[in-house]
Length: 392
Image (cartoon, rainbow, N blue to C red; front, side):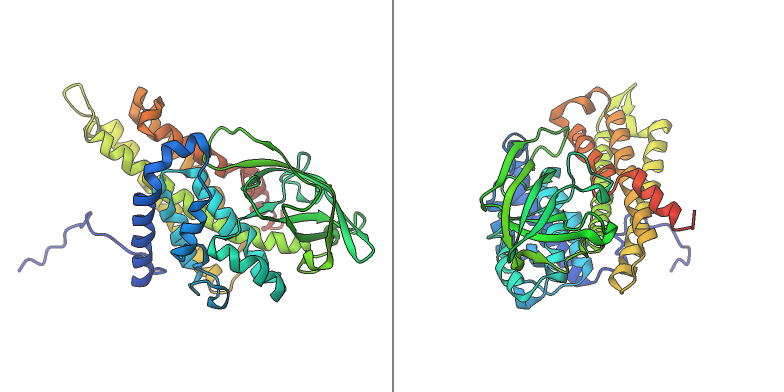
């Protein structure tokens, strides 16, 4: 028996945060995405993905993986949501992944965390079933990264509130049944002057103004919304009046980490697609993957993807265990989104002219990935958060 240890490059490693149950879930989501979603990916780039995707995912239990069983969820841990964020990419539709993520990881977590029992029954239960679709309203025409600059106002009027303002770049905005809306309720109170509301999208005064056209993420609908004298009751307030800024900042941390995981898996998918191409495409008499310059490109990409993966997983472990590591979450989001775009760009380069053609699919990966350096906190904001965390 030989005692010589040889590198095993073919072994499939599982990170310590994932159990066998997570791997079974991973396989289920992957099979669903490949069989029921991926065949429609090209069509949905032209039409946006249909609402039946939410209902089907609700039936399969995928919309409530991390939500309590009492509301129809699966009662899973934070890592279950990470698995969904990674494997839904097998749909080959960045826009679909974005639309689902807004529903599962952006709009609904604040309802679970801060909502009343009545709000959870009215919104969360049907949302987990896929019977109601959610969107999140933060960004405005004049306020993106500068959340404190939000102008949408909610003014006390009798026993209710009247909301006026606008929101833009709202994913699911045209299909949503309700929006978790960030408003300013006290313009003189600084960060203590914001309040969240759950607003039904069929209320008088809610106007879905325009379907926005985008560089990528074509399969998701993105809206410009207006709110003109929209009247809501106190029952629409989510969490505490005046604490909306802190509520939404909490939400953004979980969103950024799930997004970072999606970036890593997306980069890995682009890498795998391109590795296959490099082993088939011939130039100068041999497969291009055997040329040193190409081999080194793959080595460089693989190292960066793995570094991003370890950063995301370790930070997710800390977050899931009760820590609030905002610095490391910001690092993970920044690094993973940058690497994803860099890898997608390099993969186009390796494909050569073919990479620029729609039929190979790699150009769409770049277009879809590019949003990750902007959404949920731009690179520049992440850098500032990290820098300030050191007292600078």
